[in-house]
Image (tube, rainbow, N blue to C red; front, side, top):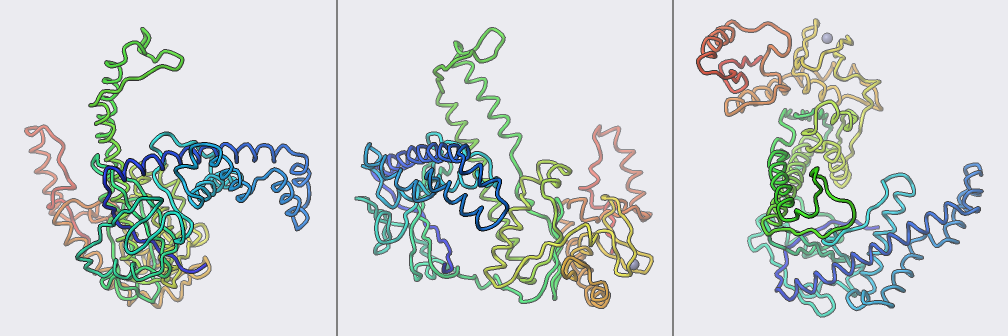
Length: 505
Ligand SMILES: [Zn+2]
């Protein structure tokens, strides 16, 4: 398959277009649910069959695969089998009046794909889509169905004009429009309570690289922490926050949800029993206009979160790639990250970031190597070979051999010198004199930005965190704080007070 990239453009839609699109989207949703039901049924039947059961008993090999294939074919648990099913039901009912053949096939493929992933144990059991939960539709080729003609989107009687980027500062859109269109996807999004439609052009070739996003050919080491990321390349090192703008609005959502609960109780008093719980059985629920507004506010919060994360992940990827496209990083269990450091870390999605980076690096001809942490122990080892376990609060690496550095930057440096899951200690030792000034410069930049606002404790700017002696000056400040405290009746904010911070450089 040839290279593919996507370019998204908002669409100029009339109320009529939107009404038609909504009907088609809902038809597609119902078709999806029907296909999902059918594939799950076929999967269950296949698994119960004798052919499948006897195939399971066979030793791994060609005979076993062939036996499984027979079982799949017999029960129609195949993509094309489902296409035929989808076409049949669309012909027999109203769904066929709203969808074209290609779209029908794509919806069936989507449902089958979800069930197939579930069958292989890669994903959980797929869920049926509720009203309004289905938000995108795609064609199969640019020849028929949803298609791109003369800078317009055509689809069975609809003609929609895209809102082009007039400035197109970096030439991204001009490049995209010059490429061959493979097929189109229509996406519906609700932004600030308004429904907006977008067209995604699935194009042949590679995406335009902005001039400011240069790609370095060299190797770079990466260390991703719960709130920080350290990157070291051939020419520069960076220690920065990891997706600091991604903050989950837990409080805001909770407040809206509590208000919604009160509203629901007030508008549906008959649905609740004396003890305040919902009565059993299906019942009708009235939702006030304010309730609906709150619902859309919650959805907006979540949309913003996803959008911010996507943007920050992209920016960070570009930053990493500008320091080297052969990327080496420790393989971390992002699930344990989430367990140990709380849910705010999960929201930053480090795993998703590494996946994006892997894809972008591969596109640029580079790679991402995930190093085994058990064998390398990058956070414990020094270039002299000493292995010393550091507590998590110790943010500073200081060895008896004279090597000193910030912990994350140092482990990124070590990751850079790993080959085939082992640390090449001689290579690291030889590279250290050249890398040390880079690390020092990175820390200097951090201290400069620190004067503008509080920085995460994991940067290790406050030396007391690293269990090393504190300068005299900061002790004095602490005493002053302690005196002021009873009067002000509040905790001294040590992080925010620049005088307490004692940069280690
Ligand atoms: Zn050492």
